[in-house]
Image (tube, rainbow, N blue to C red; front, side, top):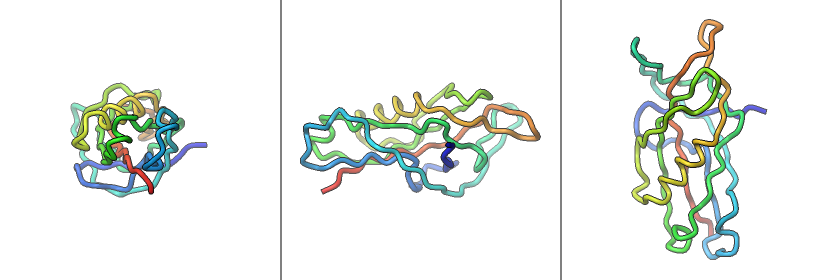
Length: 145
């Protein structure tokens, strides 16, 4: 079942598309995939004739990102949110990922990139035709007590 995808055109904090939550003291499950959750966030659209549009609605996950909390980051208690600008092709596959806003922690940024690269999207359709589009995907890494 598709999951609604929030998008953002600006590097501001938005409700997470995928939130990684793990117990702060748990080291035994450090390599297990974390659950992803989705929430909608309205944003402004930016469109240029020579490039795919940045869309604000109409894109959904077919396979949501499943970020894995890096073990070393978990041990250090690192948390943060990563914003990735993602080009989705007309088939719903990820073609390009760029860092829109870093969490400030390289391992969290990389884990977010890996998770989003494996995600699948329902293609963006405009006037009955699937087309490439950019979306900004926030991935939040947060430890629980």
